[in-house]
Structure formats: structure tokens, C-alpha cells
Image 1 (spheres, rainbow, N blue to C red):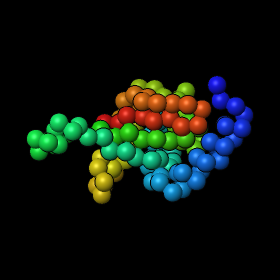
Image 2: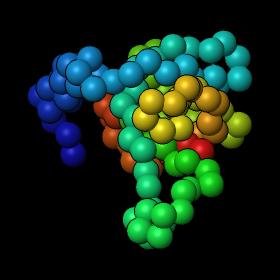
Image 3: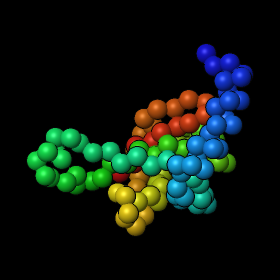
Image 4: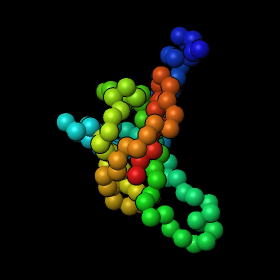
Length: 114
């Protein structure tokens, strides 16, 4: 259970965290595109790195505010939603599909994209 103080503290910290580590991405829910800030984590498979093989489809975790205005609310997640994000560091952004919710709480939600 989260207390009211914890919720206020996490919400205030979210803005600073996104300002420090976030990057602009475009969320495409199927209607109007929305520019949001996300923390992008590139997921790799250690077994494939050791053999020198590359992932065929890059997997990206996108952490955003669990808010329908500032990010992507977990409650609005549905099939066929996309987000424009670079598939790896330094690459040009491309459209990736939101595959599933990895983790969510009242402040943050992390989506797996590929």
C-alpha cells in the first residue's frame, strides 16, 4: 500500500527523473500522435552477445509516466499502439509496437516494445 506522502514524493521526483534521463518520443495511440518524454532501456540477450550474433528484432523497454497526459496510462494500453523510438543508441527513431506492460504502479509504467 502506498501512502499519500509516498505518492506525492514519487510524483514530484518523476518530473526531475524524466528531465535528467528522459528523451523525447512520439506515442501513436491510433488517433492523434502525442509527444512525450520516456526513459528508454535497450534490452539485449547475453547469450547472443557472447556469440557475436545480433538481435533480429531489437527489444526496447520504455518507462513513461503512468498518466494519460504526460505519458501513457496503463489503463489506455491496447493492441496496435505504437511509439517512435530509436531501436538502439544513436539510431534514428522508428515506429515500434507496444507489446506488453512489463511493470506498472501509480506513477510509472514500463512497456516492452519491438
